[in-house]
Amino acid sequence: MMPATPFFRAMSAILWKDLATELRSRELLSGMLVFSLLVLLIFNFALELDAKARANVTAGVLWVTLSFAGTIGLNRSMAVEKDRGCLDGLLLAPVDRTAIYFGKTLANLVFMLIVAAIIIPIYSILYNQNLFIPGLLLVILLGSIGYVVVGTLLASMAVQARTRDILLPILLFPVIIPVVVAAVKASGGYLQSIPFDEISPWLNLLGVYDVIFTSVAFMVFEYIVEE
Image 1: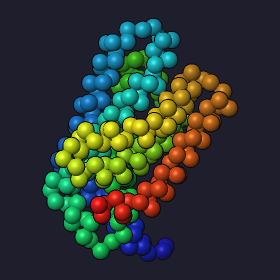
Image 2: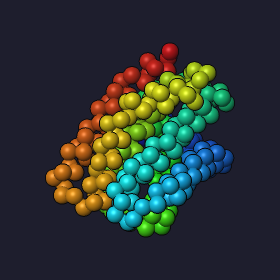
Image 3: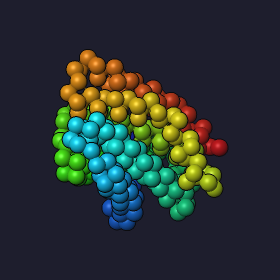
Image 4: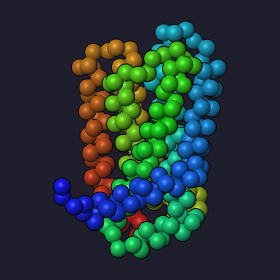
């Protein structure tokens, strides 16, 4: 087995630091989960529709819930680093700064997937709709990756501003529209048993978006945190 490089050691250290901190405090996940459950309950009572109509809106409700919960998590994860003075310490550490970015991104992805893993069975019970479809789970993974890749980068930029809670959604949602649209279309396709040929373009869009913006973040993160 090859020894881990300094980049991967630094990235792993950031990831485990965030996971251990959240395990002790449970501040970030609890906020995301409470918000997600409230959204699901509100939609459940607001959309008093028959089974077919509910199936048509399932993808939209699911991604509205994940998108807004994810924004809360992104904002909070960077705000905690800034408020406690940890961000300056991380930037002063003698490691590649992109390792910091990927460590934070992986941590945010873990938190978002934990929320998804909890709300999917709850949604299935409340709406009487089976969401345990392999293709749908793949869409949630690809969409979540695209969301946190861009969101972590923009959260690193917005955290320096006093109005960061307002600034992040303003910066994030216009950029993330292709991910949300593709994820909703692909999710709806799997839920409605549409032929794969009609779903594959949306999956391709998600995959290409993830690769492009991961590469962009790798190139520009160091310059963003220096500002």
